[in-house]
Image (cartoon, rainbow, N blue to C red; front, side):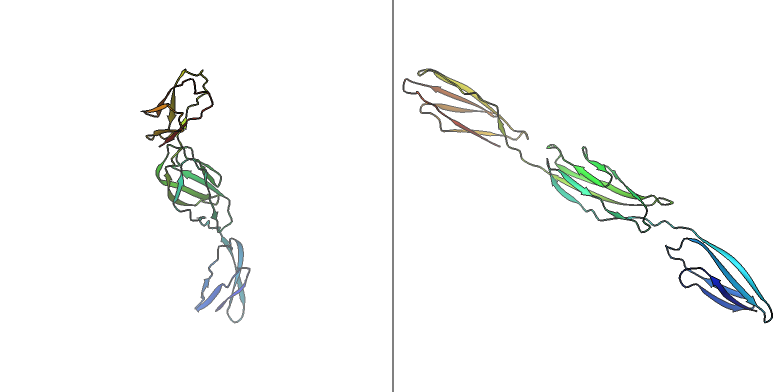
Length: 231
């Protein structure tokens, strides 16, 4: 009896070997694009008659996991907007969704966009931030990456409390306080310059200063003393 693969609609190059004694071996490795229903016919011939065998081959889809593009660790600064656009590919063309875990306070992940503006009190090291992509295949498969973000401290400029213009008659005394503050609570120093003749400025510490001037009858005019604060 001789055996043959007489007909098939299989893609690729299926193999059939007649082993003799009515035994044959059929070999076919479907690729990942070959899911579907196929019909294969085998024939047996004994020298007089031919017999056909119809076999239905059902190839089920195999879901392959998506691949998340490399993200890498990042270094950013306080108060600055920071974004990452997540990118991924799926070999089966399945739809994908993105998720995040262990995100820092204030950070968001909207679809594929990670966004964060760290506050000025969030300097530090944030590790084990997980981004994951999952396809909608059966069963759903995922790929994920864990990154770290280092938030660098940003020094902010100290500021002054407002001082309104001051008017006084000649011979009068001008005495007022100035107050400065630092948003980062750094230690600050105050220096005065461009003082009128005879005026004094005392640094009281803690961002406070005292301007003191006893005018005389020749002091008429407009004066702009300057106080500088530095942290």
